Image (cartoon, rainbow, N blue to C red; front, side):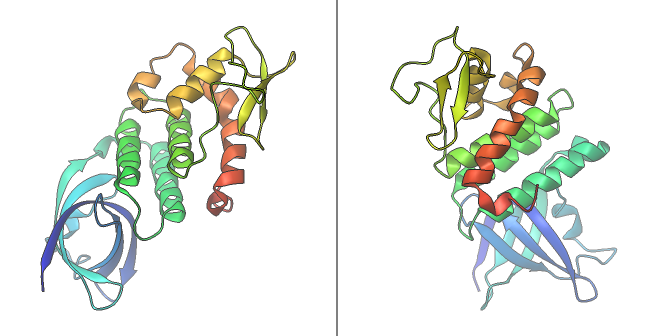
Length: 235
């Protein structure tokens, strides 16, 4: 049978039989794969070192007759080893993997692989706020599923201004001017960056970014509850 080569990120690992594991692997081109890694739990297994969590691996596999293929070889390409030194970052990494696994079907586009890889890269940097990583990840999932808010104009089509205060309309997914609104231009600017094509590392350099991420957390959670219901029982 034909051997297929790909990059992959391990989303989950389940022990199977005496020494095997069933892996769910996210790839750029082939979607999510379910592969059996035979004998991987044995001490001298050559596969074990290539299927670490929080890593990008180079894998070779053979498709099975049913849903599960066979992992032939695995080698670490990028190992975000700093993540595992911090239990809170490990927990967030697990949460991001579970969320991405839940919102994607078997054949997600390459964008999802890039989102998770970028999140791991940021988690590996101890200087980047975990809350910012979480908000960026959620914004990118919403965007990938076609649920970006309107961050340019209000419900009447008026451009949002820097001196304004706003409330958020969840039905229309936009901001509306309100004298006692809790959101201002700084919140909206950060949301534009989170939903845009900006690196998390660059966003992290904004002055007072932690203050604004804390204030936007509930807003982002509410958006995801409305538009990514697959995640509701994971939070």
